Image (cartoon, rainbow, N blue to C red; front, side, top):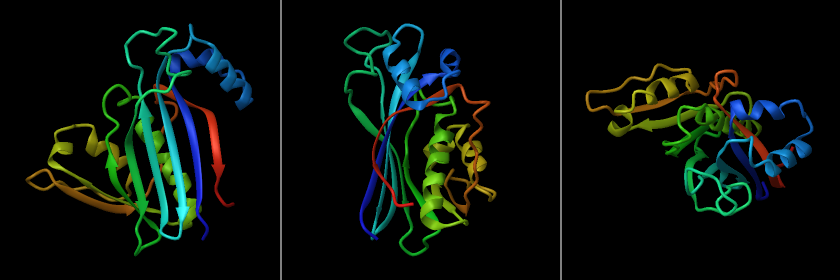
Length: 203
């Protein structure tokens, strides 16, 4: 397999402020409207997703950028300026089992948590992975005692894994089971709008 890389950049906006733009189904025009409108649209972040295919396997990496301040101005609008980005999600294929994807990092806490974006990212990764592994994708990961203190963490992963996740006395857990779609766009409170794409993957 030759090396392939695709990068997609999404603007994350509040769902309530996005409703005024939903009438436009043309992605290019929609993206132009979203990028040009700086008064009605509440932009809360930017996420860059990178998918790589190579001889070593499949990887899915997400990086997040947040506005530098709580109020928008001409100098800090995340739509038109480059802000520091941080890697928030890394998933890679298992070299021994091609239908298993291993989550090694997921740290999208803070302002984008609880809006549906985390489930959306996992769903995007699932779609990408199915093109690589075939119809029986599995997902594997670890929950640490730190994760256990977050009451949202276990229910979150349980929506995406078709296997009962059990926690031991120390709060540790390992899960590996069929990968489920757990993203519900109707319950989400934020919307991801594709504004840029580079590269492509094989069909």
